Each structure stands twice: as C-alpha cells, then as structure tokens.
Amino acid sequence: MNRLRFLRNEKGESLEKVAKYLNVTMQTISNYETEKRDMTPDTILKLAEYFGVSTDYLLCKSDIRNPGKQIDDVLNEAMIGMSKEEYDILTETQKKQIRDFALFVKNQNEEYKK
Image (spheres, rainbow, N blue to C red):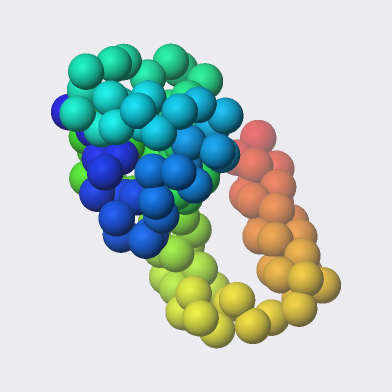
C-alpha cells in the first residue's frame, strides 16, 4: 500500500504533472498508485521529496509525514521557548545564533562530564 494518490490529490497535482516530474508516463504513475507496478527506490525518494514527506509515510510504514520536522518543532517550542511560527520569522543570523548557543551549551555539558 502507498499514499501516492492521496498525496497527489491533496496537493492538487495531475497524473501528467507527476509523470513529467519523474520523466515517466501517466500510466506508470497510475500503476504506482494502484500497485500494479512497484516503485524503484530512486522513485520513492524523488516522490517523498516532491511531496515533502518521509519515504516511510509514502509507503504507509508510518503515519508521521516528516519526523525530522516534528522533532524540530518540538525542540523549537520546548527548548527555546518559541513556537515554530515565531522561529520561522527570525532572520537566518538569529537562527544561527540560537544554533551556535545550543552547541556551546552542549559542548560545555560534555566538558563537565569529563
């Protein structure tokens, strides 16, 4: 089972557009959706990237669309006291300062453990 048709419909993409992205025929995409044809690992990776989901989500091995993003969201809100929306409006310099400070604290903690 896969979520290709669901993701394609959710994003409002046509068979034709996804087929062009992968450089295959519309019939091939239809066959992927109905599981009449298996996707290659390369195709799975490309589709996951195209739809912004993990390969496990695409293949129905997980219900978490993007585990990395979920971890980032939790860290942003819980660890630095701001929501994802607040973090997103920071400048790249400000985001780098937060990351640098977090690494500084982590390194201090590692030195303390020695």
